[in-house]
Length: 407
Image (cartoon, rainbow, N blue to C red; front, side, top):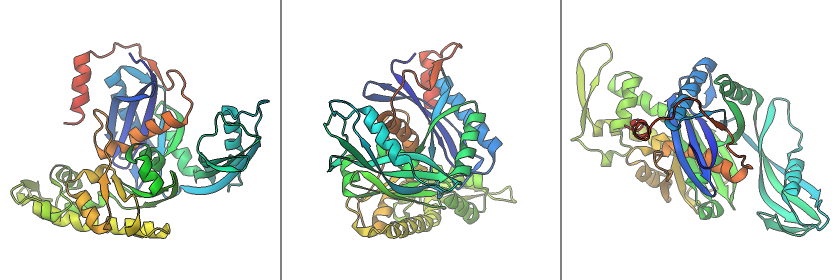
């Protein structure tokens, strides 16, 4: 059913839970399955209802399984939120091989040495990310494997998070019948898809605007140097629309998705739609310009808050060399990049995964987890999946199921 190694990602967001199945064949990554479900148990990136979150995860997993015809046993889970912190660390070991050639074992030992730090009991290590390796005093090395040396050092940062948040997240995944293979920090995952190597080296701000929160991350010299979370996102725009048009949030979300435009000057008066009013059976007609007049001020506020976070990181917001890269479901609205360019006074682009079936900014995190894991972790044959005993869907059924997701 599959030719290469299988990696499964879970992106548990405020509005959606997405399960993505990736097949790694050599160095080629293909997305072969996607499942999604409404995320009712998440608020502002935190789990507030375990039962609903478990149900959403199960629905997303089931959907992805049916598409590909395999049973998912384990998955890598993305994590973000304002509880995440980065802490600098340093590790030193002696090269163990008799010929002094640095191998995988030496790298694993020096990374483990960097991992040993004092942490408060409420904090837990999520990941250790190397900034640079140093071999016998020679710094700036990204990959020391195969080099000759006596002393190996690493400058790294430790990604830590709230033990309570992490355990609740893992508990939800395990109650859904899935073993969690590991946690991946969302900004690192998104950068694997959204950013080029030049952008990461020059200095770039990655803005992931989700439904419940906006994650702002700064990359420079190839590594993540700072990350922050703003507790505001697309749900605020939906609430504004519901209040402005006097309708339900469910209708407001549908209108935002179908007719939303972030810039009034790009909106069309000819694009009209009818809105059922709360407390009345009468539908009132509005146009896209009316809708844009509600959306644009809220988007301006989000971009202003992003600039303030960038300033707190010690970076002049209008002097970011690589500009700003936008990701998340909200930025798929027409005019978002144009408005951002005006507000940031900088180069702005929207990140879109280049894989069939997931060419949408909202899939950046899910696809990014798979790509990050493929680069970072040692792959095991058929890790995370086993063939199902049930009959695999026919080719046409799989194609129909694939496209039905995006209608």
